[in-house]
Image 1 (cartoon, rainbow, N blue to C red):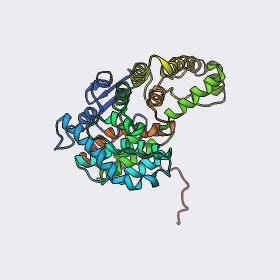
Image 2: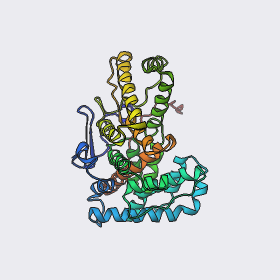
Image 3: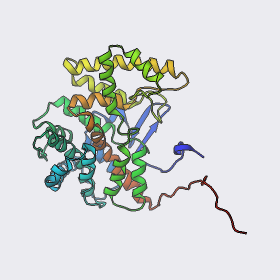
Length: 362
C-alpha cells in the first residue's frame, strides 16, 4: 500500500505539472518563469478557465467581470461582516465564501474568485476597529485587494508583487486542497462546495498554514543574533524548520526564486531591503544546518519562505497569510473542479481493513 497516496495517479489534467526532480512548474503549457510577472491574476484565471466555461469572454472582459464580482460579493456579505469578524480571519473568510451560490456558471466562478480578495481585507480592518472599504470594480484585482486593506491607493511595486504572488500560487498539481476540491466536484456538487473543501484542506499547518511560522522564525533568530545556533537547536529538538523541504520537489522550489526576485524589487532599500538581506542570511544558514543534520535528505527552500516576506511587505499580518494563499489558489480549485465535473466519474478509492475480525458463527 502507498502511504499518503504517494505516486498514485488520481486524475489526468491539462492544468499544471509539477516536476519535482527538475524543479519546474508548468501552468497550462507555460513555464512559471514565463507566466509570473508577465500575466496578471485575471489573465492567469482566464488561462486556467479556458475550455471549462462555454461563455468565457476575452481576457480583458474577464478582468472587468471579476471587478464587478468583487463589488457583488461585498454587497452580499456587507451586513454580516461584523459577525464574521468575530471569528478568526480564515474562518470568517471561509464562512463568507460559503454564502456564495453553489452553481457551476462563470458568474459563480468569478464570485468565488473574488470572495477571499474581498473578505480578507474587510475582516482585517473590522478586527482593528476600522470600517471595511468597498472594492473598486475598475481597479486591477491585486491593487484593489491592497486598497481594500489600506484604505488608500497602493504603490505600483506592491500591487505588482501581490499580483505575481497570486499567479505563482494559482495552481500546483494535485496538492491536498486541490485533491479535496476534486473529490467534492466528482459528486457533481457545485463550485462553492468544491471550493469550501479546498479551503478546509488549506487551513492545515502542513499545507497553506506554513508561511506564517517563517516570520516567527525570522523574528526569533533576529532576537538571538545567532542564526546557526538557533537553527541547530531547533533541529536537535526535532522541530521542523519552516520554509524548507517539499513533498514533491527534490530540488529548489521554482516558486521560491520567482518570489525572491519580486521581494527584491519591492524594496532594495529601507525596511524591506534589510529584512530581505537578513532572510537571505538565515536561508543559507538553514540550508547548511539541514544538510549537516539530515545528510540523506534533500531539503531546499520552498515557496513559503519568500511568501512570508512578500506578504509581510504588502501589509498582511501572519494570521491572514493563508487567506491570501487561498485568494490565489481559488483559480486552480475552480478549474480543477470543472475539469473533474466534466469526467462524470465519482472518486471512490478503496481502503484496506486492518481492524479486528468478528467471531464467525459456525
